[in-house]
Amino acid sequence: MRQLLTGARIFTGETILDGRSLLVGDGRILDIVAPGRTLPDIDRTVALEAGDLLAPGFIDIQVNGGGGVLFNERPTLEATLAIAAAHRRFGTTGLLPTIITDTPECHRAAAEAAVAAVAQPGSGVLGIHFEGPFISPQRVGAHDPRFVRAPDGADLDFIGGLPGRMPGGRVLLTLAPECVEDAALSRLMAAGVILSVGHTMASAERVVEAFDLGVRGVTHLYNAMPGIANRQPGPAGAALADGRPWCGLIADGHHVHPLMMRAALAARPRGRMMLVTDAMPPTGTDADRFELNGRTIYRRDGRLVLADGTLAGADLDMATAVRNAGTLIGLPLEESLRMASLYPAEFLGMAGERGRIAPGWRADLVLLRPDLTVKGTWVEGEWRAS
Image: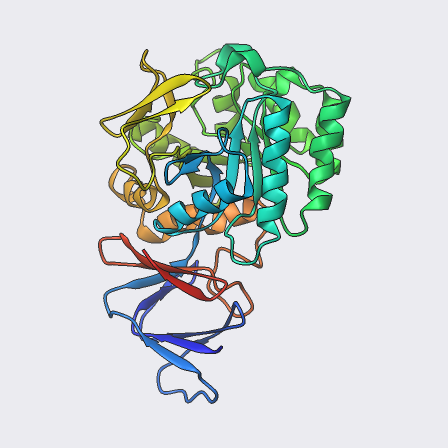
């Protein structure tokens, strides 16, 4: 069905256009239409509010849960779809359900769920993110240290085999590069796995070596890694000084001080910082606690914490992250939106498909009110109100 979306402003991924309409059909963007142009064969015209903004749908590469569901507790197809549905209310049209450090059985079940979800049209599931278990025992954060380990041959076969079973999907693995040998890193990347540095005690030199090998990302910059010091810059210092990797940023005002977020953006090339939520089950609910590997996580004053105050994921959705990028960091709206859509798409190798509004690109869109709350989304051209 060919639909013409009219009335709202359009953010293309580069600039905001006024007075244009958007033609979509068969799950794709067909054209950006100038005023006064006559179009034949329109099945439906949708009048949008003049003050609203059409933007590329948000892409979140780090989502542990939502809608009351924790992926580690329910590594099933139904859980991945429930998590995606919960985050769609906040403008996220594509995400990577994220399984943190757990048993091999849990990881394998999560992988099967993701393979099935990617194959389901309109699911909004883009693949899977393994955050661990190949991480530093000194930087586990809320991960269960019982399950932290180095990869063996069976792990490499399993993870390396997933991209071939997930056409169009992505497999992201967060690891500590000091805990994984170069040969294993290269083997995984050759199989199509995207690697990211995180939960690490690595030296800056070791992190740069990982970037040299082709590691593409840094997971939740500053968090679960040593702080920057003048003689020991560590992973975060390496990330700020090296223009190659994409860095995820949890812009909730709790994980990273706003000044440090501004410092990161000032240091890094444009296009290499992404907003992530690191969201947990309370997103989209009024729950005040949940269980993670037998431990209670409390929702307190916008934070998710263990009893000792350790941060355990974030009480954040992507629309709030976009708003915070403006209010806490001082970014222009266009750049905040790119950090939630275009840049993660580029990190995942999905540029040309997602992250822009242009002819031929997927009709994955978010409709924002003037206050940047979400009115609704289109995924593959199908509308759903928030």
